[in-house]
Image (cartoon, rainbow, N blue to C red; front, top):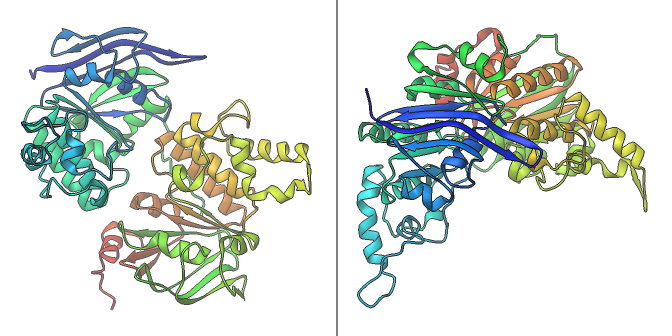
Length: 499
């Protein structure tokens, strides 16, 4: 039996008006990768914040290596060997790697001055342990996200961490960086570290994790060995019901072409790209990270410069694309990042939903509050946004509900073409099922939907046709009757046979 590194039992945490944790629990052993899953709002982050010392639990017990521990601060947590690497990395871009690793614990020379040389030398073995072959004096802001994550892990070594918490660590990484991260985690496992791996991705659980702990509504549900459980079991524990095949799709005969792009050139991001989408059709766009899917759509929307090419809407040529021009003509883009590009999180649901359509209920100095409220209520009801009212701040919502607000915002513009860029990134399986139902319903109503996703099963199950991109080029087009993972991947890698 492996040595127990962590046991949290009967953890309760209450915030004003909300019991976030109720008898929550998790146990981790040395040399074990423990997957940690649950819907958005299930309490995963809250429990980890208790362990990380962000705030104390109201009640419950925490044992580190069999000894009862009191964790009242981040310093308490770190001194007990816990390192928490958040989804939003907490590094200073204008400091060097070494300065970030020893931030707050700077090394000094004999004159009592901070010594960058001593810190760089001390950082090297930590960087070697994570396989990061970079000069410790390099500025963190110049590193890729994957490299920055390795710096965070190297920093945990400098804190003598025994328990490592990774919160959605692959959400912004390329496939190559994900593989490097997984190799690093496997190596840490061999070294006896206990790793808590928070993820929404089933494939990651079965590929990397030895076991998985499930939470629902702030409570511990169960811990299952990865090799002995199925995807359906995990989903059922997370959502309290069997979702069955949660990809919801009814294939209908598409109507007329609504949007057509001809020979679009936008630097190296899009090279001679042509495609069309019809009303009632879901057109999937798939490609590996850096393939140019998002950049092509931004060029079409006028968000990024387009060097040449032609865009037609309902057969009429678009003279000069701009975001306002395209929106007025029925094209809406739901961006990839709801936090940085999509929503004003410190503002209310209602504010966000109505932001693109202010002229509809504001005339000179008069605001038609009844009409404004009607639009907000209709949007919230149509997308089943879980909140008491439109006056709730978006920052308090789960990821799934934030994504629904973003959808409601652009659906309020009454588009005929809806471009969805990674619409289910960072949300749980229950919320994904709801989003898929909404997308399917939109297509049934006659909207032309362009679905961009880096998840191959998502595009395969939800689209009528698929365009596949590689390094700015459209390398393949497939009907849903022709889909196969092997063929799609060949096109995505640019090695398909074009005979």
